[in-house]
Image 1 (tube, rainbow, N blue to C red):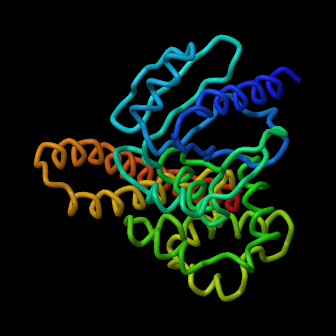
Image 2 (cartoon, rainbow, N blue to C red):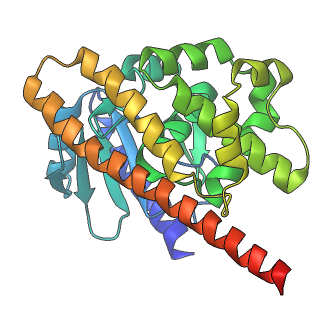
Image 3 (tube, one colour):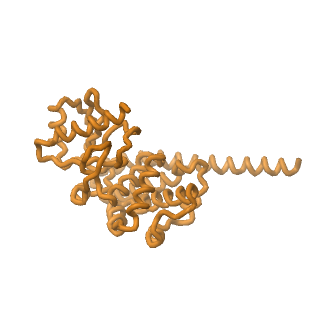
Length: 285
């Protein structure tokens, strides 16, 4: 398949580009196995960001910087390469880069051996990505995380996972993501996927559980859950920010999120009222 061949060529090219330098890189936010038919880009985390941009540009890549933490790199015949300085979305950091590199392991993607995050950092990256960037869980992501939990969940360092999410201000986002996977697995396979001790540590309030269990399309995370999680993370980040301008910009951005949340709640309330009215009318007839 062409996409698989492109993924192989892209990974091999990245390895060759960095082979003669002292730059460390790893592939993340990617399903670590040999099925790359779904890949449209490759996410690469580097420990020396500016030097990496220079290396890629001198090796035929066209580089577009999209912010302080990420650049998009193109080269004919290859998949798009997203070069990351941090594991960061919406100007929020979710993991320590130094820790991720320290705990990294070797993995194979499309039969190419590369450095990838540890199982714990892999789970953390996927969970943060769903809640804070995407807003949904893809089928491939669900099955990948399901496999990780089934094969390695009992040996995970759950203390590390909980500590890192708390350190960066998104423990609620982590619990929401993992409980969503647990609920989807129970609905699909009628069995528990998280270890019992972990389920107790990751418990969420009845309010979130009702939202997750009753969503009409289970692969979509309810808008209310996303908005609450993002605003909890925003408040945490604002405490660390020294710039009033940055604080105001992010507050204005999230005000729109709260407006959408209010509209969502009102819309759901109207829909429920209409359903009740129709049900009463049907009973009378």
